[in-house]
Length: 287
Ligand SMILES: C[S@@+](CC[C@H](N)C(=O)[O-])C[C@H]1O[C@@H](n2cnc3c(N)ncnc32)[C@H](O)[C@@H]1O
Image (cartoon, rainbow, N blue to C red):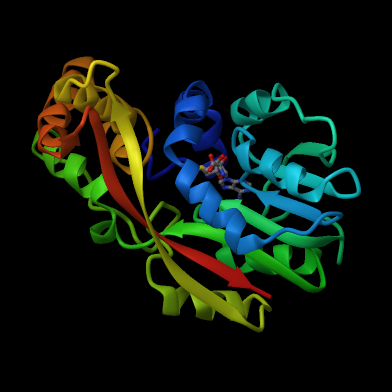
């Protein structure tokens, strides 16, 4: 089955979900500056009831549980069994809100009407088959005055952490399909006007899309070696995220060649034993 013909449930429950599940710690470290931006934007108050959409391996649900405290509650939903298995194994700290994990499609799941003060998502809302229906379903789950805050990617050109390795990999996969910016996929909501229209059509009255740019620490070397840092950074982007999509179902020699090509591409970006490249997102707030 190709990427184009799979359902999202098949995609995130198959090899990709397993890979994300294995890489949870790395992923959370790389995305840490973006997670901070998400929670600064959401400003979740103690006692809040919070819905985490496409919660993946659980990092954001746990931060939300810390913010909400014992008087709050978190419902974390995802359609990936392997990612939820990792999430369920992560401990909620004393003093945090209880977290309930649910394997569910956010497009169709009944989360209860007016049940949550806030919905959040870190890159979990770009994969719906019917985005309008999904956002309307999320809107319905929010109390009057409730807000949805999420991060999604800006255009690929605003994401050097993607364009630099992608340029290195493309010659190795000349048959790769161009990125789909209309259907489910990471860059689907790059256009803030289109996204705002969609959210309004789904029932949100005010929508704000604020640009967020952060350097992501993709790889580093204890001994300060530029090559080691570049190799570590290459291993991350070949495994996870938009560049890894180009390599899905490719034979090991192609993957190995990609790792080497990306290492070379990252070398000029290594400083003091670390590779950092910019990521550009929209911090979207809708109420
Ligand atoms: C790019 S990953 C982000 C995961 C997590 N939020 C993070 O930041 O690590 C996208 C997530 O959205 C989930 N997802 C995709 N479509 C979904 C849907 N319709 N309902 C619930 N979760 C969905 C996937 O299973 C996956 O875990």
